[in-house]
Length: 180
Image 1 (cartoon, helix red, strand yellow):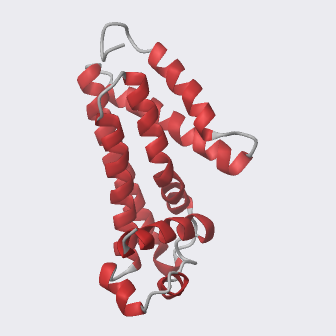
Image 2 (cartoon, helix red, strand yellow):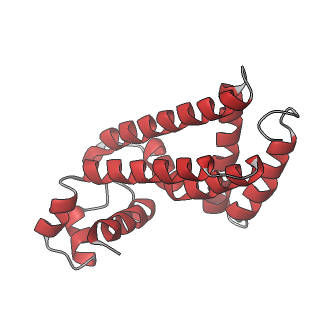
């Protein structure tokens, strides 16, 4: 794994475990055995690191959605790919305070979520004209809810919930459109 990927992986874990404000880039560099200069060569700021994580998550999820296959499989792949981006986004959007750049992080996370909702809206709109926004909101709520139950309630496995929920979601879609 290259250095940039190692940094992204460590940052994703740190943001999820410690939160954005409590994650220090010099500590991440030390954990990875990197000098500050080597770390900052790849990401000049925490904001740049967060932006890269958000973009990587978005691209991975969108690629899963756009792959070939039945709609149910594509939606499940999307939901599972989105999993890595859900917790950092949710943690930043719901964070309170405003210290250590949290306001800036919340803004980045909210903008990433808006872009992703627009993408889902367009995806569903192409399959079900006039219903894209509503279907995108419902599907996004299912995906987010499964991850929140696993993370914050316990006793649930997001992957199992998503397998069931995506199946039910697709069965509820109008027949004859979108490959259903």
